Image (cartoon, rainbow, N blue to C red; front, side):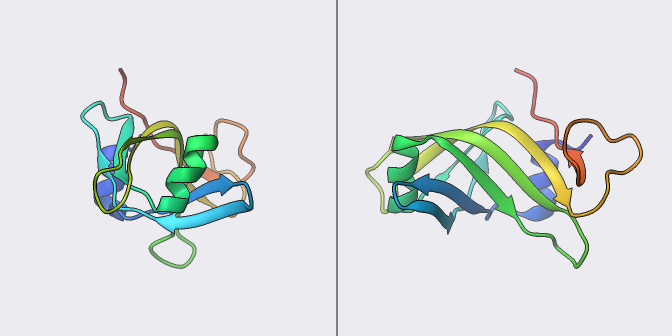
Length: 126
């Protein structure tokens, strides 16, 4: 099973960031780095995204497929702002789930409840 570190090496470290504010969904982007624990990411957030996670810390990160018909990556987690002294607020994102995802029926050996073609990405053991 692919690890978070391997997924970041393959897809890069610039995902879309999806949060929810009082006025609905908000999409932005970030440049993230993997923390030594292998289960969390750190990166800057837009001011709107930082405000959103202050009220609703659940968020998702999305990397689009690299080729037509390929897998995208979805990572879910809980974010908290850890610094506000730079140009953008800095957040720590504790990952709760990560998958390669694409439309289609589940492949052989599929586990879990996803009804699409999903492959889990392993979060490091603590």
